[in-house]
Image 1 (cartoon, rainbow, N blue to C red):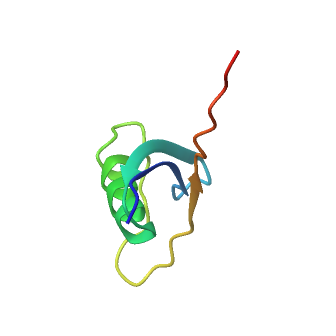
Image 2: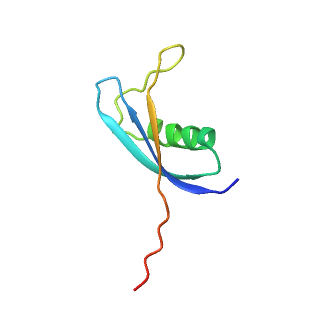
Length: 68
């Protein structure tokens, strides 16, 4: 599977969105890497855990070649 650059976004318990850039080979890997990075950031005020639902958005950054 091709490795791609992605942006992973999640909201904390206060509704503040946090976004990180990751490189991953699958959607599941992108979510895992993104959530691990977001949860370790001291600015994040609590991401729901356990059985609480967490909304995560993954945006794949398409590599476009620009030639001049």
